[in-house]
Image (cartoon, one colour):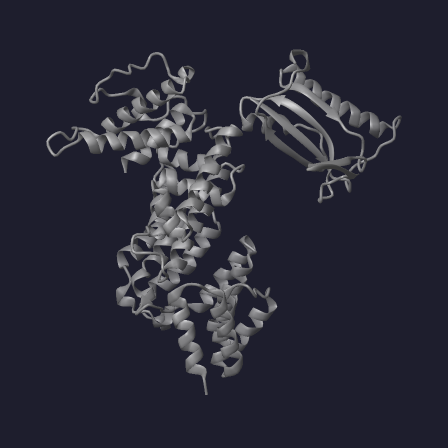
Length: 121
Length: 401
């Protein structure tokens, strides 16, 4: 079973550590370890980290296509990134995410109907 | 009620609530078609279990889901053949030892990914066994609305693959289940005397039945027992609460119409709960209710004790409704001026009819009649319950100069 997991950062708690600082290195190390643990056990299919908000563009499609400055979310949380993970069921997905080094924010977990594999298109 | 147990067994076995529900429906249909007064099976429960399981397998086959059918199951077994899964679910999780499969199903309905109102609808549908029509009638919503709600909940369970296993968080789930049961009870309590329709099921009785399932394990929790005691104390008063289509308050109820067997059972259960020395809000509320239900006449009610209990309850639950009830108790223990003081120091619950009713009652007892009438009028705007409205209109009329 696949899930798309959206990671929302809470910008009020988002620590913007500059590269080269020890805090930055710690954060990178923590995330690398987490991602590796997902991958090692076969759960990580894909993922990406987005740049810090607010850098998004919102494209709506409704008859015509209209672009406005993002982010669209009304809440203060900004999309930090996403994962495409494999898990036996929702509870396993939740357990996998328990060790994600997120100080504050939220995950939104969407069940996947079918994934796209570029090599098979 | 065999169907609930069978449904629970199948849900665990096939990890599919919808399939379990449909299969039980098929089996019950088969029963009505094939059982006559001469040919009722010797063991109807076993028959139902076996038939429903076979119906489930049939459905899976038709849907091409042969992978879910265990190959060692003899699908040609006769109705009297004992089946090993009648003991319960075959691969129960480690640490699960719940005994009653209906309790298991109840806790499965309370996964946090399902919204509370849907949890309640699922419990009523799958564990209490009410039809969708009955649930819709009880909540006074159109049948289609309830169908959509239950379908959406089952869809979510399937599409998000919410697992039908309990894992280690049984006590959290039980807390959610108790909250849901209490919601069901309150719905039933508040709708007594309203136009619910003669055939709508009594949600108070369903809630009591569900709580009885939770407390019938080997080691029921103090809060579960406390909730059951609380509901019995309140339910004991059901025949005195509505008279001539009007709600009758505690002070005026004919206490000879109270069901003392329910009160005695409540006392027994409450003692058992308290003996566990594991306090909680349902036990405190049960203690409060026991003061009311054990008072032979209204004047015997120990209001100072009730005030103290509400103060304890406020430490466990900061809901403004509890603060309101505390203020009412203060009014009874220390007089209406103290009650008004307590009411004003709490949150003003402008949208809650009981708040205005309490306010009006206190104003009336200090003879501020125009203000009291205004408060009764506001309360009237906020309730649809026919019997409540009759009472409120009577109070307003009585205050006219």
